[in-house]
Length: 186
Image (cartoon, rainbow, N blue to C red):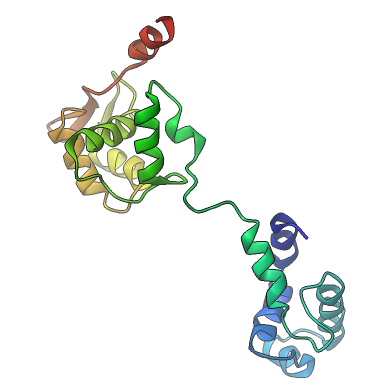
């Protein structure tokens, strides 16, 4: 079973409830039927399916080893989203971005100024040059990457990546598409 097959199987609320019960001990179909308000026949059918797929053993207990095996086959959490490092970044800058992003989530700001600038330039790429953004819109974009969007917004302004006037923001620094064209032409 692959991790994707496992997820497709357990997306069903009844099967998920059965697995939750099996994590505590053998599944009691009568008790679970009463708890869920589902017919016992349906539960028995789903228990059998989970058994045949290997998630439950013959005693109707969760097969923890199978879950451990699936977990080992999942991608590492440290992997970054390829979209984060796409752009005009040097190999060193890509390494910095990879270190501070997990998926699309910014896990923290670097303490070193040069590294912080790289991360902020990457975030600035989310704002189109020439467009004006309300503070609320800036916050909603930055919130995708980190829950502390106010700090990110402040740093983007402090580092000259965004400019603010009269409650409106616009991209004023960082790398632009023109920088990408120059890099590609070299």
